[in-house]
Amino acid sequence: MEIEETTTEAVEVTKLERASRSVKNYVLGSMAIGVIPVPMVDLAVLTGVQLKMLHSLSDLYEIEFSKNMGKSILAALLGGFVPTSTSMTAASLTKYVPVIGQTTGIVSMVILAGASTYAVGKVFIQHFESGGTFLNFDPESVRTYFAEEFKKGQEVVSKLKPNKSES
Image (tube, rainbow, N blue to C red; front, side, top):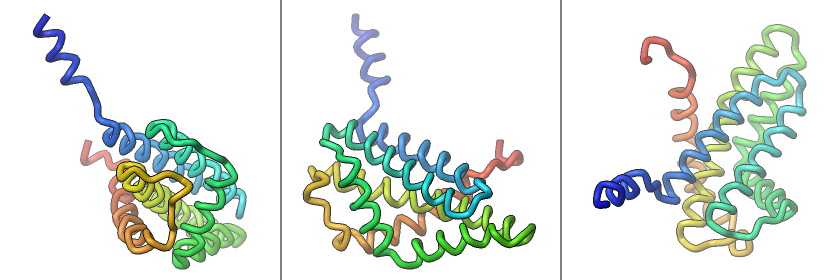
């Protein structure tokens, strides 16, 4: 009996750990979206993935989710962080230029999509962990934290790239 209780405790994963794993999975999915060769379609699909991530996190934290509110919050959070929104649009549009533009656009979008998804996920994990909801989320108050997490996200994304020598 004691062994079963110990095993159950060892297997129990905290909500924070589950949320972090979920964000990592959405980061990987976002990186894959960067490979979509059609300009602007990648941004639309990325928004959908980030909304789904917010929905998953809200389910985990038992917070009511509204797709419309999620869209508004993402637009306010990402739109207010000018380097991200401008860079992602530019990277997507670069795909119109044959060969070099496509390659550059894809590489840039992979990094920017993954890093922005990472930052959005980390911002909402922190917000939900502190008892916040979508109704009291203030994008302006997390701008600095988002920027820090975006930079960390770029590092995380670069480490997620397959590297056979590290296997």
